Length: 426
Image 1: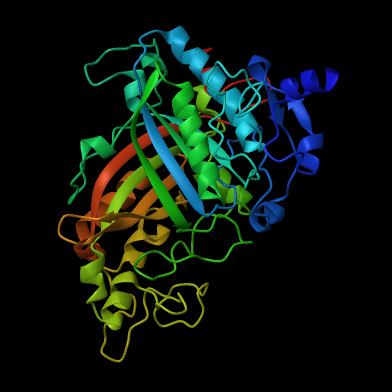
Image 2: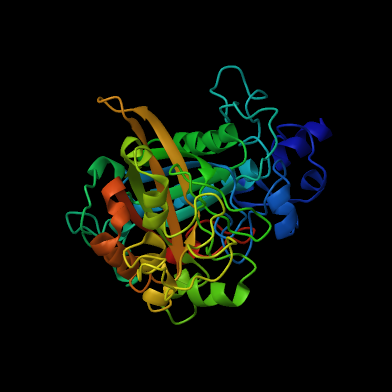
C-alpha cells in the first residue's frame, strides 16, 4: 500500500527507473512530480534515450542539442476566462515535467487507473524511454489582443514590443490554417512516438479550454545547436546551419538569443522569441537543376558544405574572392551571402528547423520542405530584416514558397513549483 501511494506521488514510470532519472524526482506543481537531473551538453547530444532537464533559467528545447524529431502544434484558446487559461497552464506544466522525465501523466498513468474512467495517459509511450524529449511553450500576439481587438485575458498591456506582427514578405503565400495561434508548443525528441505522445496528451488535457489550430511533424533536424553535433542536410541535399548559433557560444547567446533585463517586460527576461515558417520546397524543379547551379544558388559545395572557393565546411567565407571569369565565387544573390550576419548588421538566429514530407499534392509532387524554427532576442532586429533581404534578392526563392507563419514569445525557464507563463499572469 505504501509503495503504491509513493508511486502515485511521483507519477508512473513508463519503463521502471531510468538510472539517475528515477532517483532525482522532485515535487512539482498541482500535486504531480517533476524530474530533475543534471546532464552536460555533450551527454545530451550523444545520449538519444535519456531525459533532458525540464526546469532551469531558460526553457529546454532552445539551445538543447537538436533532437531528430519534431511535433509542433499551435492552439487557439477557446475558453473566455483568465482563470481557466491559468489552470490549464498549470496542468500542462505538471504534465510536461512528467512526460519529459519519461513518466506517465497523472497519478495512475495509462493502465493503473479505475476501469470505469478514461486513462489519464494515452499510453502509446509505455515502454519507451524519455528519448531527450523537450517541450517549449510560446505565446502568440493573438493571446494578448485577438483579431477583433479584444483583450480576452487582461494581457494587452503586457505584450512585448518585440512580439511584432510579421510583415508581408515578397513571395509569401500564407495559408491561414497553417499560421498563427494563441499558444505554440514545440516537442522535440529522438523518438517520433514520444514527441507525438507529448502533443497528443497536452491537446487532450486542453480539451474545453484550447483547440489545436494546426500541427506539423518533422524529421532530420536541419541545424546543429551544439558543436557536439554534425551538420545535417536539408531536402535539397545541402548541409544546413553550418554557422548556426551554438550553445557553447555563451557570450553570443546573451547578445543574440536571450532577452535581457530592460529589453521589455520583466516576464520575458531569460526568454526568447520564436519565428516559425512552413517553407514548401519545389523538390522536382530543384532535382532537375544542375549541380553547379545548385551550388551557386546556395553558395556552398554540396559534398563538403564548404563555402565556394574553400575546402572545409567551417572555413571562413571570403565574399570578395573572384574566379578567373571575374565573377564573385560566392554570388551576390546566393543564399549564404544574403543570410550572413556580415550583410545583416550582425544579426544572427538560433535555428532548429526540421524537414517535412506530408505525402504528395494533387499533382503528384512531394508536399515537402522545411519547417523553419528560429529563436532570437528581438525579431525586429533579426528575423524581419534578414527575411526582407532574402525575399527581395535570394535566387533560391525560385525553388521555395513560404506557406505558413507564426511568431511567439517564449518566456524564461520554469522553476520547480512554478508553471509556464506564471510571471506573465502575475
